[in-house]
Length: 104
Image (cartoon, rainbow, N blue to C red; front, side, top):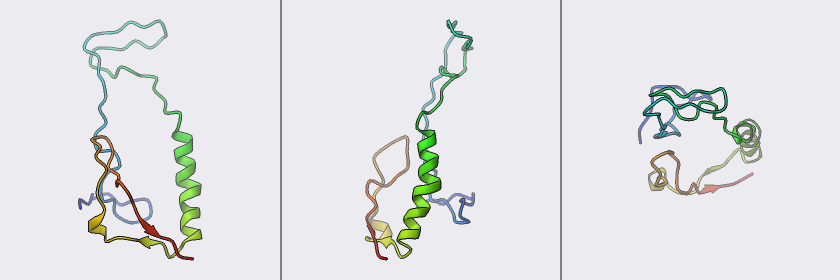
């Protein structure tokens, strides 16, 4: 397991960045558009990009995850840490499954 030098938000250490590779697309020549965004050569092709799900992701991180740990303070992994396999994705570092044991 790889560990980063950056401390996580709860004072712990992050095993791997959640984003493994973000394949940005860059313009190979200037692109004139009908809206006010002109894409210059070498720049990202979507300058006005906004993730519609970002508010939901922040709500999950700020509300649901703390509620889960409050409801199940004794939650533990149901398998050995070495048995957890990564999802086969070149974009995100995430486990394929994460079996846990919920106890109250």
